[in-house]
Length: 334
Length: 257
Image (cartoon, rainbow over all chains, first blue to last red; front, top):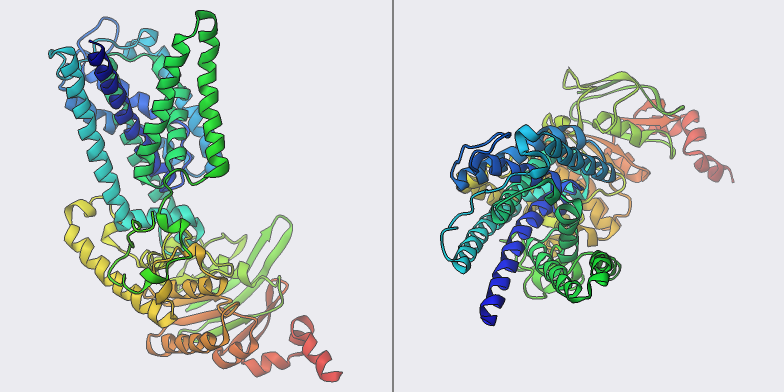
């Protein structure tokens, strides 16, 4: 039975890693490739989670719902809703420079949380929404978990593929150019405001999907789940630690940070009760310390944007034979 | 082709450009000279739509473009370079050039999914064009390097290369010669002349290298304190007492000594 317990725990971890990876990839579109400092991940996450919850759950007294639509419809709707909310927000806020955008988005995420908490007719208020259907939930426990893991991994793969493909296309080149030098990109005919809005909506829609997947996994969602520490800053730490601007780095960052985060929970839980509460704050401290160390000693993250950037002096040998390639393979030197 | 009419730009109380008017004829290479702080680059920023003027009008190809932004002006055929290189530092040199041309199908989110062949065809053409530009600039050996790792002179060349990636009508060059080696400079002058004569580009050139101005520019406009001091051919401008006083003064002292 011991073994089964470990297996269950591994699957549980993997599901979270998959969902957080979706969030980190979404943030990577906004920060890593476009330079938008969105500190309101939790807000778009919440919009996605609640949209899917309302559309798919059974009727409950005192709140909107009872549509009992298929889960897949809920997920697609969560992306649409988060994107639709992001549009007017982006339209107003994207004119700010990065640090002001961060302040504005923190505020917006908080507004979304408070609206969800107080508009009981829509969201169930502080009680939240429960009995959100989870696909395959009539299987045995382990198989339910494994099936959900498979769904999360399929979603992660699709999101990853979609983003990678856009980034390798001229669209990605343009977005990186805008991030590197806005004035020059503007002088080269790129419409900065419209393009930043596009990236903001694109990333936010995927954050909505991440929220929906978590809500269906928990089978319930409450305003407590929209904690900026868990839903915004943890994602930021994962992205920065893993390497913003690199999708593989983002996923690696999620794995590393999530393992540290949940292992530290093990440690604190095994402490005597009087220390356990204090130790909870130690977990946040450890993550913060880790971030400080990474920023000090490896600011570009574990996997930087391209291997080229760290080996740009030794490029003589590759320069003559890549006439046919826009993106030289970074693999050899890594 | 370009008419600047009583243009004024104040930053707080300071008027960087003040009541400045001139015209640029199609097909010319107009030189813009003047002492540091005369307002040359500010004037470029105004013409290129990076700043909105406090007062005055700009007409380009017969239309009022005073309120247009940089990207809108680019699509009308006005391209500029920057005095301090504005390379995209985390893009490769080749990518820096390939991102320039307008109307790229691949910049549309949907086209990458629904018209992949059209995007691929366009990319191939762009890559060839960018490669030709690099060959001309003698920079093919750094094609796959990140632009941020280039030397100062190479960044200036890359700036020029970007203007060659599009079918511009009017090109604003802000000190293209600064930091570029002499041999390459002669080639650069040649290329500017070729673009001017064969492809009909009109240029406005800010430069402190008087040799280059003399060779290429007709007419020359001298600015001082935010406004046009004198306009005419190089010899006339060079010998004007006001220009000597405001800008080339050291030449006179040198001659008398």
